Length: 225
Image: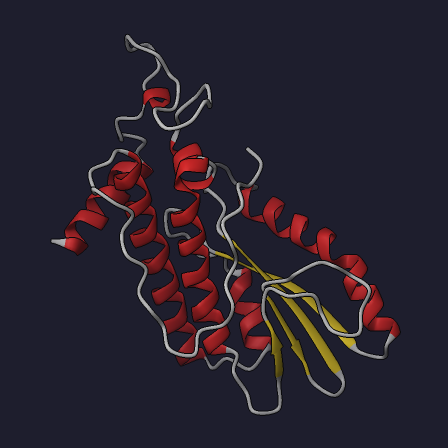
C-alpha cells in the first residue's frame, strides 16, 4: 500500500492534478496556502518552501545526504558534514567536505522542484557560486579543490551530472546505479509524506527512521521562495 500510495502521488504530481488551492486556476475559492500566509498554494510551495513542512523537507534532504555520505566512504578520507571546515575562516557549512592529503572536495545536496529545464542547472550554479570563496581558501592552502552538487528533484528526477561527480570520487558503476535508485525513491517517498502531512492525511509528521553511524544533519531552515 505504501508503494502504491507513493506512485499514485508521483503520477498525479507530475501531471499537476493534486488538489491544491493554487493549482486549480479558474476554480472558485481562494488560492492561499492552508498552512501558512503564502498567497499561492502550489506544489513547489508545499514540497519545498512551506514553513509548516520544514521538518519533513529537512528529513528528505538528510535522507539523500546519508545515501551520498555512505557511497563516498574510503579509509583515507576525512569527512566533515554540515560544519565549518577546520583551519579556514569561512563560516559556510557544506553538506559534505572530503579531505585527503592533496585534495579537498566540497559537495552540497539540493532537492529542487523540477519546474523547468533550467531548474537543475540554476540550482547547481547557486551552489558553485556559494562555495567559491571557501574553495579559493582551500586552494591557497595547497589543496586541489573540487566543488560539486548532488541534485535530486522533489519528484524523483536525477541530474545526470551527479554521475560524473560520483564517478570522479570513485563510486563504481554498479553502486552508482543502486545509489541513483535509492536516492530517487527516497525523494519521492519523502515528498509524498510532505504532501500528505500538508493535507493532514497523516495525523502527525511521519517518523524519521534512525540510521546507525549517520552523519550530522541539517536543522530545519525555511528556504527562500
